[in-house]
Structures are given as structure tokens and as C-alpha cells.
Length: 187
Image: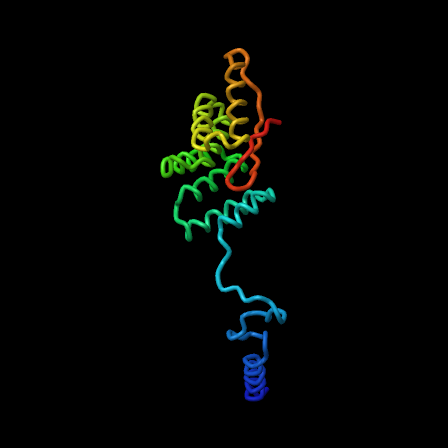
């Protein structure tokens, strides 16, 4: 068998790939968008994406979006609170508690972080701590949030019924109401 014609055929085929769009070319970045499509040059904010994913019930994806938001926002109290809230929804209560405690340490006036910390503390059975967190959130919000007031009332009611022989049974759910407002629902 003569190798020269085989090498020539391979060279011609590979050479054709360089000029054929979409075939083994480093110059092609994918299929062109349809005409009239807006060209996006910057990424969508990870916090916004995370908030939307949380609203859609996609907590693991939201956590990933919040983690990407660290590159843009740093470890701000808003990012830490968001990561804590996603961990709460995933049932990772100790991790959620750590992130939310760090968030309120960084910004002691950040209402959503105090509220969410109270939710975690209630879920962990730390009712006095939850009460203090909800009281702080309610005071910082100037009593404007019905949801935080309801959370505070709920924990106070639980504490009134609490005894060593009769521990409270509860299963709480955190619901985002927009603008950093959350509602705690008992199931």
C-alpha cells in the first residue's frame, strides 16, 4: 500500500475542517444567535439568580448561584444571609446557622438575616435564641413587617407551652415575600 495518497487524503480532509464552519475549528464559538437577538456582555447578578431559584424551589441551584455571587459582592451580609437561607431550605441547619450568625456579625442592622437566623434557631429548638433574633429583626424593621411580628408571636406562644415533659412539635417553612421579607409558616 502506498502511504503517500493516504497522507494526502488525510491532509486534505483536515485542511477542509479548518474552513468548514462548526467542524473542528477553534475559530467557531458555537452557532450564531438568531438575527435580532440582544448581545449580552455581562453576567446576570448571582444574588438575583439565586433569589429567583429560591422562589422556584431550586435550593441547591440557588446555593450555587449565591456562591458565584461572592466573586461579585464578596462575603457581604446579604450574600452570607442568602447562603444561610439556601442551606436552611436544604435542611443543613448548622451550616445555615453559621452563615447567618456571620451575616448579623458583619451587619447588625440587616433585618432579613436576623429573621432567618430566628427561623434556624427555632428549627434547632433554640427557642430563647429565636425569640431574641425575632425581637431584634422586628425592632430594626420598626414593626413594619407583619411576617416578622407573626414569627415573634409564634415563638413566644411556643415558649409559653414548652416544658420538659411536653416539648413543642413544629415543622416550620420559610417563604420569601420579596424585598428581603420572609414568612415563617408552621405545618
